[in-house]
Amino acid sequence: MSEELPLIAAIEAGGTKFVCAVGTGPHDVREVTRIATTTPEDTLAGVTRFLSMAKSKHGPFAAIGIGSFGPIDLDKNSETYGYITSTPKPGWQFTNIVPKLRERYHVPIAWDTDVNAAVLAEFLWGAGQNTDPLIYITVGTGVGGGVLINGQLLHGLLHPEIGHLLVPPPHNSTAVQQACHCPFHKSCVEGYVSGSALASRWGVKADALPPDHPAWEEVADVMAHALMNLTLSLCPKRIILGGGVMSQEHILPLIRGRLLKLNNGYLRVPELGRTIDDFIVAPGLGARSGLLGALALGKYELDRHLNDTNSAPIV
Ligand code: ADP
Ligand code: ZN
Image (cartoon, rainbow, N blue to C red; front, side, top):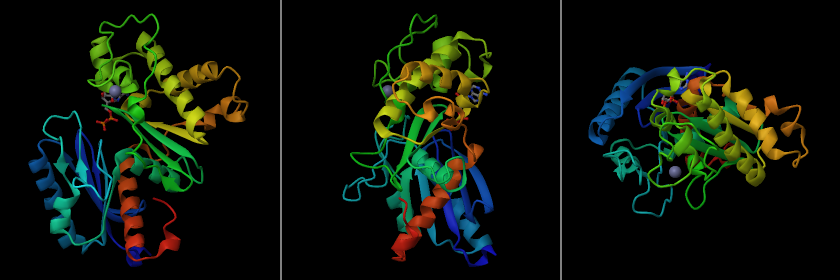
């Protein structure tokens, strides 16, 4: 059945690991590998080794889709298009990704953020099907968010940087380290609730914080501020919360409760009332949304390349 569909190479470029795959869609992923994110040279060498192996085993791929940690350069007229740019990750500032792959593989290459890739996959196959505008936020080692709006992934000045939305500092905090953990901002979401921020703030790894720990009230408060601002500005029909920190079962109900309080009856819609459980949701694709999103990006880039604009309404 899937024989006629073109094979796509997908790369989810994360700060901890690069996950690479070849396949034709969510039900036909033929090969997956994980490569630790060490130096750009070693990591990219691992990627090209995998792609060459996959090519000889499964045949040539027709396009490559990449969803990357950021910030990244998405401006096709820029000299650094296809680069990871001002990331705080040591050794990865201004890393050439797309031009390097293009030298080697003569196929269309799609390039977007890991979270824009994830929101696309959730829209196509996961918890956000036919739901537009749709937002996907991951709270893991860092915090990031992607936005699909009016059938397009949101790009503009750059791309959404939801992790760095500015929020009030947690009220009456008892954290051992109270300062915002972000090197750029005094009071942003990532600086308070990323896995790294939680570990430094409370002196305990996020996954070891028990459900009744005061840290979770703060996480809920900070996240609810971000979600309120996003709801007011982008009018999403649904917001998906993924990543390791959001995998705690009790956190989504806490966030929903805070969000209702912050709304204070202002937006009178069911989503901010009796149907809030369908408004703030967990990912439908689990941890696969980034990788499947990269695959979807590759598919759309190929369609665009083949000038079949009717079948490429997204991205
Ligand atoms: P990454 O962000 O590296 O892609 P994850 O989304 O898995 O990966 O996030 C990793 C972070 O999430 C770590 O800081 C880890 O401590 C935290 N984490 C993982 N699992 C849990 C959990 N069950 N509860 C709370 N925090 C968790
Ligand atoms: Zn910040």
